[in-house]
Each structure stands twice: as C-alpha cells, then as structure tokens.
Image 1: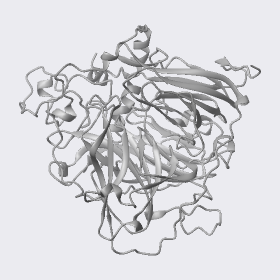
Image 2 (image 1 turned 90 degrees about the vertical axis):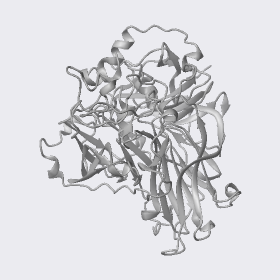
Image 3 (image 1 turned 180 degrees about the vertical axis):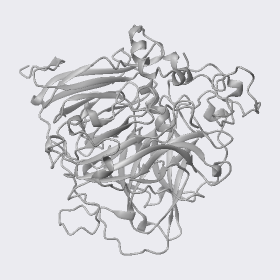
Image 4 (image 1 turned 120 degrees about the horizontal axis):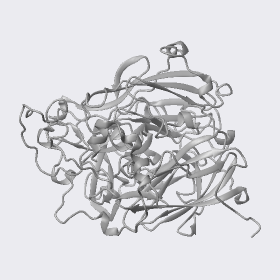
Amino acid sequence: MKRRDLLKMGLAGSLSAAATAGHSRVNFPQSGLVFPDGFTPSHVGRPSPPTTPFKVPLFRMPVAEPVSEADLNHPLPPDPLAHQRYDELRPQKFYIERIREFKWQYHSDPPYNQGSWSWGFTNGRGGQATTPGPTYHAKYGEPILLRRFNKLRPVGAGHVPFALPSVSIHLHNAHTASESDGIPTNFFNPGEFWDYHYGNFPAGFDYEHEIMSTLWYHDHRLDFTAPNVYAGLSGFYLLFDELDSNNENDKNPHAFRLPSGEYDIPLVLHDVQFDSGGQVVFDFFTNRSPEPTSSIFPSGSDPIENPGNQSESPLHRSYKGSPNFTVFGMLGDKITVNRTIQPYLGVEARKYRFRILNGGPSRLYRLSLRTEGRNGDSHPGCKFYVLSNDGNLLEHPLEKQSFDLWVANRVDVVIDFSAFKPGEKVYLVNRLEMREDGAGPSGRELDEGDLIMRFDVKSVLQTADPSQIPDYMRPLPPINLSEARVKRTWVFDYDNGLWTVNGRLFNPNRIDAKIEKGSAEIWTIRNGGSSWAHPVHTHFEEFQILEVNGKPVKPGNFLNSRKDIVELGPNTEVTFFGRWRDFEGIHVMHCHNVVHEDHEMMIQWQMVPSGMGDGEEIDHDL
C-alpha cells in the first residue's frame, strides 16, 4: 500500500498497529540503507528553480495576540474537567489559532513570487495565516488556554497533496499534561478544534533549576508528522521569568538583561524542495526534469493515482511525482530561515540574541559565521556566545566558533556585531554534509559550506546597547542517583525496512513503559546502527546526560545541561538521569528525524500512580 492510498482511505491511524501485528525481528544488513547503483535523489537530480541569494529580508513572526475569554465560548466553552489541574492553574490569558491553507512567498524571484501552497496559523481573532506561526511570549506563573481550529480542507480538496489535513499540535518540550501535549494520537480533523491548557510552571514547581526558555510548537500527527511540518505547521513559544525577563533595561539587579525586543530574534531552519512552478514538493524519488502532461484526464483515470496526470487539477502540480516514499529522510536543496530562502537581515553594531531552531525534517547542521574575503572565517567577531542547549539556559555562557544543530535542537546565541565595521556582511554558514539518503551525516565537512543567511551591519546605531551577556545564568538541578527507581535501555535500530525501538514498531495501543509519578529513572539510549543518526526526543521532562559511550559528561561541556534531545550518532550510547512529576498520562519518545518517527521509530510511556510502575528496579545496596 502506498502513502497516497493511506491519504485517500484515511487508514494512517491504523497503519502502526497493523504493521506491528505482523512484525518479527530480523537482523537487517547495513546495506539495507544503500540505494541502487546510479540512483540520484530528487534534491540532486531535479533541483529547485534558482533564486538570487540574500535578496529577500528575513520574515519576523508576529507576537501572538490574546483574545477575551468570551471569544472561546463558541461553539463550546472550554471544559475544565478535560484538563488536569485546571482549577489550580486557571488560565489568565486566552488565544485562538486557525490552521489554514494559503499561498506563502518563499522568495521574490519567479516562479516563487506567485506563492507556494502551504499550511500555517492565524494570529488572534482574524488576520492572515503565516508560516512559521505567531511567536508566543508567555510568562511563568501565567497559565494560558489556546484553542486551535482545524480549517484545512478535507483530503483531496486542498492544494498540499503530500500532507494529511488531520493535526495534533505538540508544544515541544513543555511541562504539560498529556491531553494538552499534542501526542500523535490526539489529532483533530477539518472542522474540529482542540483546547490546549499550558500551565507555564516549571517541573516540580522548582523555580530555581527547572525554568525553560525557548520552546517551539509543531504538528505531531500519527504517521504524518514529517509532511505536515514540512507543509508549514511550526512556530515558537518563548517563556520568560524575572531573570530572563525580555527586558534588556530591567532594573532588577539579578535580571540577565539579554538582548530583547527587536534584538531577540527566533530563527527556524527548514530545508525544502520545489517543483518548476515554485510549489513545495515532498518527493525523494522523482529525479528527472518536469514533463508536460495532458490538460484533460483520460476517461476513468484518477488524477492522484495516475502518475502521468499527477500535475493536473486539483493538485496544481507541474512535475510527475513518484508513487514511492523514503523511510530514511527528506532533504531539500533550498535552506530557508523563517520560511524565506537565503534571507538577509540588517543589524546594528550591537548584541543580538538569536534563538536558532532546526525544524527538520531530517537535515543536521554545523553552524558557523564568516565574513567576505579569503580569511572570512578568521575574523575575531565570527563567534557565538552560546546561552542554551535545547532552549534551556546553561550555567555559564560558552564561547564557540561553531555548534551542531540536530533536528528539534534549539540553541540560543548572542552575536556581537559591534566587532564588525559598518557595511560588513556576515554569513551564517552550514558546514555539515549529509548522506544523500537523509539518514544522517556523511562524516565529512563541506569545504566552503552552505550560506544560509546574511547579516548586513548598518552604519547607524539607534541607541546605546544596554544589553549584556551574564557570567552566570541557571544552576543545574542536583542529581541524586539514589532517587532512581528503575533503569531502562532503548535500542534505536533498522529492521525489516522500518525503524524500530527495542526491535518493535510503534503501536498506539501498547504502553512500552509505566513510570511512577514523582519518581526518577536512568535511561540508556543506544544506536544499533553504524551509519545513521537519530535525534531522540522524549516528551514532557528535561533530563541530564550522565555518560556518552561510557565517558562522564564534565562541567563546562555543552552537554552538561538540561536537554530533551539525545544526539545519537552511529555506534553511540547515551545514559541520562530524568525525573517524572506533576501529572499522569501518556507521552511518547521518538526519533526527531521525523521521517524515521513516521515510519514507526517511537514508543509510548505512561505516568502512573506510585506502586503501579514497571521496569528493572535498581538495587542501590549493590
């Protein structure tokens, strides 16, 4: 059965269970990840139309606008009984989004200037939809309720043929109850809505150690996360408190006074493919040039099923797509920033905070800065002051020339443009080469690198720069290994042509771990392969890495932080300590190369009352 059959028949939700029922473990050879000789993936063999680099300004997402509580009374008021701890964490602000299909301009050059059919989010009571969606500025101690309406067209009626208009929006990695987490099985269809209750409190109500900073939201629909996010369903959610206060002029002597307002800029990276008409395509296999097709369908033909007519209405495509789909990864040849191809940003000669997110679906990055000229890499200003790992502020900022950004990683950095002369141009560069199949890095660096965006240093500074880079930020939570009740091992591997965890495909009707509420556990995450990579994400709680391949993580290391992504490279094993608190319910862990996730590399775990958990108990007396 092909993916478009699932789209037409609505069987995506039952795919995982059916596949699991007939699955038995086979040691699949590494050669299973090798394409036939002469195969060229579409992002190489059928490149997107050319664009002029650094011609279009960076898109700056609007800040989400609250609505009145009364605006949520139609068609039904929110149900407090549908949410855990609702009365205790009663919403103080209310928001509405509508998920719509629309044309988005990725670039001003033809054919992109005609707009590309995309999905995105509206802001507040009305207005145009955007991708990325509006950026939320939330505060700790100020719970919110967000109602999302699915206003997408039904299957077969829209202009984005590769995605499924059934959605579940996950707030990554919020400390949020299961019913508001956006787990893959909590999806809602066109004409329906879902209420999300975000308590905006730190795990364990620990305001000293567990404050988070840069989060993001994205679709998480079972079996269709990759194409739905690729279609445009992502955005930022920023959390502030009295220290990271969104005010670089804060009079509080303890405030960090990081760059704020116009100088605090979220950046999400997505790599995208386009056809000759400038439309977004999710197609790894069509590696030939576009071909003309008849304007009239042969009698009795199906324009979706017949690849010779796939370009005709209602799909509005101008290339002949493949009926196959990849399980390895999806790569695009156009890297976008905030859904703009190679934008530029005019900057003042001062400090800026950039919240850099890899939105996927599969590409990994190694980011650095450079100026023009032969020795552009060696300019003393080409460095990052790294503030966070996975959006969580570090104990101390780190000065780095480059850093890796895997799918769903968020790294907050400060770049000080006062180190550059007016008129200088500074480039954000990717140097990490990917395997052509999208399953992970090739192991090589790009000599010149891919230019992602350009910063143009202005000659005029509007005002003096009051912002600062603090010497010290957040203390890490203390680790007490005696708290750990059980230990678990999860092996991420490739079996029978699909991605597995502990040799099993995802089954939405199976709970893979029962974790006692209020407990701690030690998990080991192991890569069973020698040639692919998995950014492994577990929902709901941050964790702290203890060891990588048996070696302890030392203070001052970038990994010595609170995280929600394990960067699981080939032949890698990572052990972490985590706590599970405050709610009960079902969450998931999965590979965030979301093509792997969609092809069953995911497990479900459930927080249960004390005494009802499972797992290998730890004997602390040994």
